[in-house]
Structures are given as structure tokens and as C-alpha cells.
Image (cartoon, rainbow, N blue to C red; front, side, top):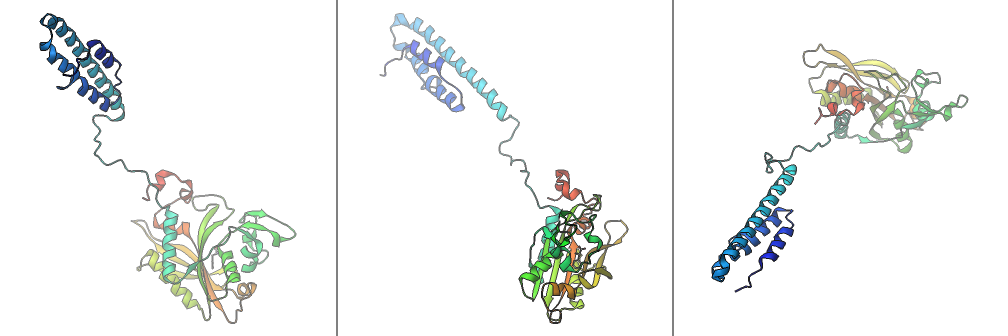
Length: 338
Ligand code: PHE
């Protein structure tokens, strides 16, 4: 028979036990209070004690059991209330977690991705250029006359302005057309690329205009590229982006770097609003002076170019009426594009 533990040492043990977890609580219960527990066995052993001792032993052991019971119950209560702070009884831990606030693509990125994928299908690659440009790439090589209004302080953010030597001016590019120049300087025709990117205009900020926006430029230079090729490309593109039942019109226009130049409008009508013509892009046949500025022979090569505003297209497709919403990064707005 195992030695009978003495009451005093058990009392000491139970009153110093650390019951700070459900596991500790359960092992306390098993060790002292269960059917095979120390105190239960001590109680069962009373019958084997000297008859004269039984009454005293019974009293002491019952008191010990009571103490152990109340230590157990108090610890159980305390533990439940501290755990309760972490998990409320009403919580169902088997439920799926609340949705994690994941980000999503910005509406401008969505439009840009779609525009890119349409042109990829038509065999265009992507070219890139810097946002800080010199006067040559942003204006001169693109056949801008010296007095052209786009060169004006009102439109252009000058990073470096030299009154006497305008060729040393540095500007935030006002359009993506300088990337055409860079591409034609780097590679010989045939060339077929789109050039997406940020552009900057020193205009007052309103619901319709912002100091920066995005354009996608397009350039195709080859032998025998014609205006018919340009029109076909633009109509195919717009049909993919806006749907094949699209109503469009192509108007004559003017840009220094294209001749002839045109603009494309689409008929835009959403819900029960009255429809309207909306200009989506400018385009034209690359001006011979532009080809000459990059040492491409305009007798051998011809090309077309186009440029479109990503903001304008995005705003019409998602019925956004203030361009500033695209730049505020307000989650109440962005959450609408999950
Ligand atoms: N660069 C012109 C603009 O910013 C758009 C354009 C590009 C027009 C290419 C014709 C050809 O308005």
C-alpha cells in the first residue's frame, strides 16, 4: 500500500497550486478530487485507521476536501471570467472569420489594363519614358512652334526654365508623345507600341481637370501606313472597350506633330441620362518633321500616332463625375470597386 500522505502537506500543496489554465485546473482535479484522486483515496482509507482516530481523521479529511473543492471552484470561476474577456460565450468559434480588408485594383488601373490588353491583341508592345522631360522631347522634336500655347507657363510645369536658352528647359511632361520620340531614336521602324504613363498640366484643379492624369500614346511606323489603317485601329479599339454597338464619329483636328490630325468622339449614354458626344482621343499621321527630327526618312516610312486620356474614359465607364475622386484615395470611394 502506498504511504498515506499526511494531511498537512496535502493542504500546503493544494493551497499553493497555480491554476492559471484549463489544463492546470484539470490536472488539479484529477490529482486531488477525482475518484482516484489523493483526497478521495485518503477518505476511503479512514476505515483502515485505528478506530479511535477515525472520527478526528474523518473531520480533518472532510475539511481538506472542502478546501480543495473551493480552491478548484474559485480558480474555475476566475479562469472562465478571464477567458471570457477573449471569447464571449455568444461567439461561435466555428464561424468563418470576418472578411479581411483586402485591397483591390484602382479604377484607373482597371481601365489601363483593359486598354493594354486590347492593343496587345493587335500586336502592339509597350514602351516607357521619363516623366521629367527636356524641351526637345516634349516640344521641339514634336514640331511645336516656339510660340505654341502648350509651352506657356500656364500649361506646363517647368522644373528648370532658361529664358535665353529654352532648349535647356526641363518640364514635367505635358503628354506621352515624347515617348514616341525616344522610341524612334532607339529603334528603327517598323515600330508598333503603346506608351502609357502620367502626364502633368499646370491647370486649376476642378471636377474636370487635375494637375496630373494618365495618357496612353500609340505609335505605328512602317512602310505604307495609311490613315485608313489608323481609322481601322481606332474603331476596332473603341469597339472592344465600349461594345460593338458603339456610335462614334471622327472629326478633323489639329496637333503640331500629326498631319492630318483627327479626334474621335463616342456617343455616351448611361441609365436614363440624355446622351452626349464625348471626345476620347486625338490622333493623326506622324508629321514628316517629327520623323526628320529622329532621322527617319519620311519618304520611306509613314506612321500614325494617337493619344487618349485614361481618366476621361474611366470616368465615363464608371459614371464618376469628379476627377479628384480618383486621387483622394478615400476608401468610401475605392470600396465601390471590389
Ligand atoms: N499628345 C496629344 C495630347 O496630349 C494627343 C495626341 C497623341 C494626338 C498622338 C495625336 C497623336 O493632347
